[in-house]
Amino acid sequence: MRTLLAGLLGVSLVAFLGCETKSPPGGPGVRPSSATTPPSTPRAAANDRTAPQSEKPEVVERSTTFRLETPATSTSLKQGEKKEVEIKISRGTNFKENVGLKFTAGANSGLKVDNPPTELKAGENNVRVLIEATKEAALGDHEITVTGTPQTGSPVSVPIKVTVKQG
Image 1 (tube, one colour):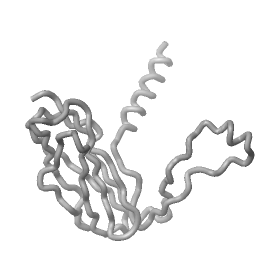
Image 2 (cartoon, rainbow, N blue to C red):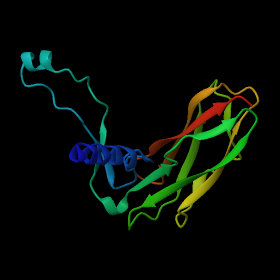
Image 3 (cartoon, rainbow, N blue to C red):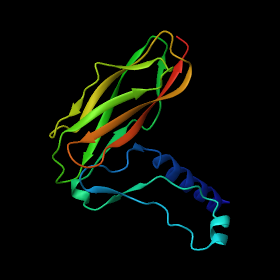
């Protein structure tokens, strides 16, 4: 019984700790590569239950990559409320570029970012943004997508999870 409980605790811990909201790597050290290989025979194609996947980035030089990170848990807001959220950047040892930032909220969510920063400068490791749920914001779970675009190389996107409650 102890072994079962220890196993369940271990799996739960891995699942909990693995729920960070980090982007895939981006920057000049990344290039897109095909995530799938065509099936070798028609029968293999018929038995392939996986839909074609989008291209996944291939890291060719980790030291020139970056990742964006947003809070792992959903930010809870009441309608008409504002809260500050931190966005972090993890830089490879040789990634010294500015990263442009763009924030995109769902069209009917009623969420917005007040005075959003447009860039993370080369020496910066984080930025704070003020998220607002308007008085008419739709109740429930939403996302604001943060897209980071380096001066060279591949851009990345990561969600800020937001839960809107009645105000």
